[in-house]
Image (cartoon, rainbow over all chains, first blue to last red; front, top):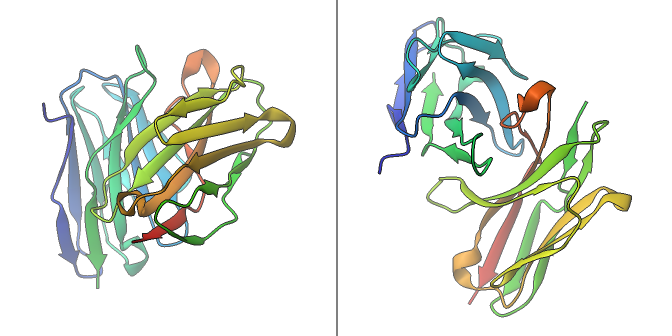
Length: 113
Length: 119
């Protein structure tokens, strides 16, 4: 019963490096989301997807790209990491058909030096 | 634009005290959803409750209760007889309905309230 799984859990990058965060869900949910959490600011939506092959911008999309090639996976990419992208990233998937509950992954802590 | 305000940054109580966490929201939508999440020191986000804008009934779940008042745009959360295990950051969040319900998961979060329960 994995739910929402994020990899990696921790990563340290140098400014300018690129990386991809992977989110996988095994609940057959259509809707998936990427949020970032910064101290004192709550969570903010980066990008989201309402189905395979579709993505849309959230509140803070700049500096990030996403892809949803398979229904169960939602990838978040940083092409050229900046210190301002140091944050904890949460992926979520939505049980829209039943409870309306948003299931979150455990988070990925990214540090950009 | 939507906004969620949790004015209490930090609250400290002694075990067995009752504590209320405030949440005030702003939205222009008539159909919306309100949520509370708990984030314990381990960092994961734990879903506590979802309430839609048409259901103003208060809800009780064990030691937890929620008071939804549309007239004051508030959705407050009370923990009765607090315990050390309740120590966490608590987030209130809001989402509108969107066309065909497409905005369900697009949550606007408050800043969070850090609750510390001392033994």
